[in-house]
Length: 232
Image (cartoon, rainbow, N blue to C red; front, side):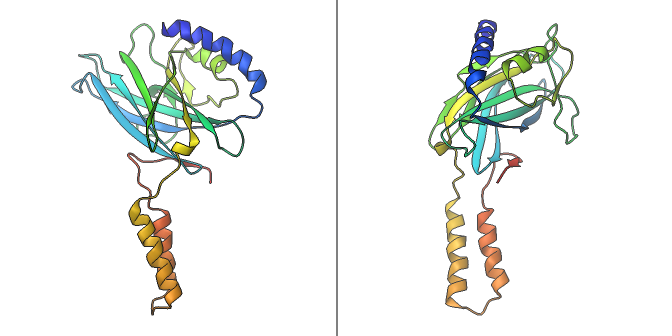
């Protein structure tokens, strides 16, 4: 079934590319990195995320680990496609999972899975987590390395490597950008108010300290895992 959907998607991608001149895609950036041990539960939900141009992109997926397998080092990459350069409206979020080519290294390098003896049984239920609700992937496929470029024309696919027949897990999800805006924690506004109060009342405190309070508040966003920040 996934294979049939993939073929249909290839045809759609070729047709839609003609009308995609106004869209903007950024990425790839790291979305996920973790080692799954044989002793892990068969279905495991992992959540992660980061900020891109002021939007919080947290997502989760389920990883089905074969019983009795060796440890598997997984790594994922994410792309965000917006309808226009001002990055508003709906986002088309593409996530691709494979094997970590260099565990421990900083460079984003992802190998494909072995089609003859897959290192992982499956990855499924990709979900983008918005501020008010969750958005489930509406497309899933297992393209080979050779097929990635056909499915994602114009994408920077340089992190992906391996034999041409190795395959990856690919998901695409649509979510409104308005539900992905970074929302400061309540304590952030308290820190901002405190900093402004000190500045305007002229209390005997060094101005640099007050500015540090405001600066700290602006950085007061937390993430599920180590975030990747791209853009301003």
